[in-house]
Structure formats: structure tokens, C-alpha cells
Length: 329
Ligand code: AR6
Image (tube, rainbow, N blue to C red; front, side, top):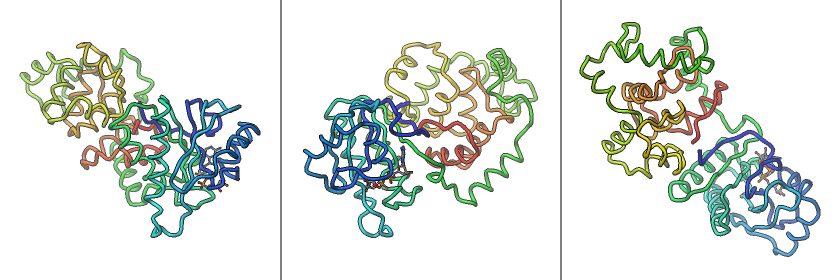
């Protein structure tokens, strides 16, 4: 997944570069800045002294010294003054300029903290949305592994209304049984077979007629995916980028008719292609998976598909709120 949200200490992340949410002097401070300087050691400060500071929204690069990361990209976020002082544009600039520097240095991976959302007071949920939006745009045009490092849960502030609506949906649908994650491959194959044979207990399959099932059996996941991409009028690159799948994985899928994807890969494509529930189930089936009533993750995915909400950011906020694994954005 080219873009991942992780919970970690930025000083521990092993990427080509980490981003330091600094101040305009670039001479150290509190928060993540302080932590980065502590781990990197005094040489970092020495190099910073040669840089002549940095303007808000701009970025400068140094070596990482004792950090696991090879480089540190220092950027200066805006101080939050209520949102009407160009804060959003300046914060976007921080991400854009840092990513541009990483590209210029041909770096393959970079990790960002939530710039401005600590000492500088930018509300975490808003800061998070800016970060995700700029990074996602960048990844539509560029190849890089980008991590957004969140330190606490406050970035995810699912509205009370959405939370209770999803909770209600889960309560209605959830069936207590062996969680899907613990099902073994045999169970998945069994599910696949049951579904393909149209066992009446599967409400979806029973709606399909025999010709659909027989025709469906002919196409593998890879073939079906490529067909859907065409049908939706998307290019391959558009589809895999929107799905947050890297190019190498996509070319494996493309070149191997019998490619066996993970369930989350299938779901990511379903979101990128804005598939409806039937189409999603169908695509999952090609890979031997089904949406389970005993997995909260699956029910949350189902909830969003039913609402035709394919906003990965919101889906991830919901997954996070219910303690589920996130979809790569
Ligand atoms: N790893 C990951 N995230 C962290 C870490 C860490 N070790 N420490 C804090 N955060 P902040 P800013 C999160 O205050 O708001 C400094 O004094 C934190 O929870 O580091 O841009 C500079 O010198 C928050 O979500 O940076 C500047 O004067 C996010 O990182 C000023 O603070 C950013 O918080 C910059 O303030």
C-alpha cells in the first residue's frame, strides 16, 4: 500500500526520510521536533544552523544522523488562528513541498507526523484531512511509500451521528460466530463453493440465476477486475492508484490470470471502482472470499457501500473508531 496510516513514534520509523514539524528558526523546540533532535544527536542541530531558517509552508532537508531515517525534511507548519488566516493552504504547502523535496532526492519512502496539530494548535481532525488529501493527490501522480504517523486517536473524530448509525447497523447485522480472520483457507474455499453452488443460506447467491453463476465461474479475479476497470472507463493506473495498490502488485495481478489477492486488496479495488454491494460480493467471490456477518470490518464496509459512500478517509475513520484494521487510503 503506497499510503499507510500508522500509530508510532516518528523517531522510530525506518523510512528514507521523516518529516520534522519545526519552527522557522529550525533550531529545535518541543513536540516531535524536540524528540527528533534528541534521537538524531547534536550534529543535526549543527547542520540546521547552516540552513538560515525556513518560512512557513516551506521545507528543507538534512541528514538523519543517529535516526533510523537517512534524511530529515524540516517543514514549518502554520500556527492555528481559527482557520481564517490561510492555515489550510500553508499546511498543504508543507506536505507538498516536503514531498517535492523527497522526490527531488529520489527517496522511496517518507513518514509525516500530523504537522501543526500539536504545539501549533491546528485541530487534529482538520490537520488529518489536509494531510490525507495532499498525500493522496501526490500519489495519483507519483510512486512513493508514504506513512502518516498518528500519535493518538484524536485525529479520528467520527461524528456522533455517523458513529451511532454504524453502531446500529453493526448491531442489526452482527452474528456472533468464529471471526472471519480466524477462518482458515479451507473455510474460505468452503464459503466460495457454497456461494457458487447457490446454497439458499446465501441470500445474495440465491438471487443470481444459474447462467450468471456459470458465466461468473469462468472469469477469475484478475479477469473480472480488468473487465470492471474497462467498464468503469478508468485507466489501469487510475484504478490501482485510487485503490492504493502499488504498481508492482497491480502488474502481478494483470499478468497472472489466477492471481490470488488478499481480501483487503479486493475491497480496496471495490472502493476505488465504486462497486455496489452485489458487484463487490461478486469480485470477492472470484478470490474465494465473502462478506461475513461475523466480522465488524466487513459490516462496516457493507454499510459504506450501501450508502454509496466511497470516501476512504471516512471509511478509515469509522474502521478506526471501531478498532478495526484500516484500509490503505
Ligand atoms: N512521533 C509522532 N508524532 C508526534 C511525536 C512523535 N515523537 N511527538 C508529537 N507528535 P508538534 P506542531 C505529534 O507539537 O504542532 C515544536 O516546538 C503530536 O501529537 O510536534 O507543528 C516546534 O519547534 C501532533 O499531533 O508540532 C515548533 O515550535 C503532531 O505530532 C512547534 O512545536 C505535531 O505536533 C511545531 O508545532
